[in-house]
Length: 360
Image 1 (cartoon, rainbow, N blue to C red):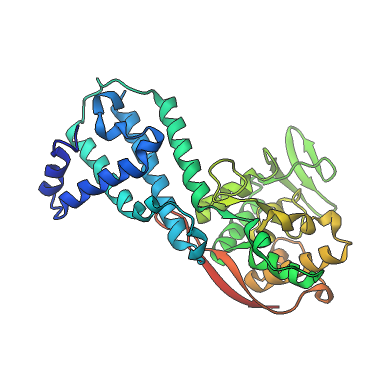
Image 2 (image 1 turned 90 degrees about the vertical axis):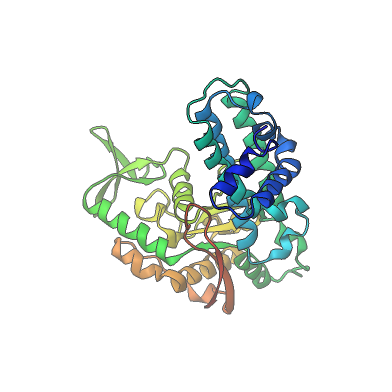
């Protein structure tokens, strides 16, 4: 048992770690509070039973390190820390677990560089256990779109209050990422590099095996998005570190990706962050462009558009692409709001969530 017979502790001390015994204690804490619950404790308490091949073990330890690190960042970055009041006490040590786990990976790399003779689980068992661990971690710290509605006082039929509640519980993308996406889109269109959009035979044509978005003024080579939002999800995760509508490992639960001006079958709108907001699921239907004739829907859509104009200068960015994203000020719920903005990812973890004051 590598850490029990002090090999890990001795290695830490020899590498200048002045708190080797404390680090060993964090290993005990990690095993007791997290790993043993998902069958992952074997990587520490029985190496001969834990490793089939060294490269698999190190890869899965790396996955675990990444997941714990993201869980820690999510817990610390979310502005309303009271949402975590129900989180298991074991989560309070996740930052220390993350650090000591990284050291343990380094220890294994140096102490067992060539030994591939251990027996244990195959890769599928590792994947199952890690998936189970991640799901339960996310269940504890996920941002749930239904929470704000369930905890809200009665709306008393006040549509403006409903719009404000939806706005203050939505998540906008940051301007730096928005400009980066915009510049890439402009360059790709100019160079005739295919860009993504939702498939639609009404405004797209396949010519000589290539799909194009077409109207009276232009023809843009494009790729049909595999499921209608995959490229958008990938860009959100790449830029901010957050996942939404991606399955079991979502940071956002009961949220939807909403294209505020619609037109997702137009590549100039589809991946443009000035057109994209992560909204609570209960609010999404009222942002459906098919319901835009309803008074509440008109208020919601136009207020979100006004926010996007203030945050990004959506009209100017749209004009650069040859489109005209406007809104009707008569349907805007005017006021000053503190909206959530997802900052860019840093060092492979998730970006912070910043409150930004916007007046419309």
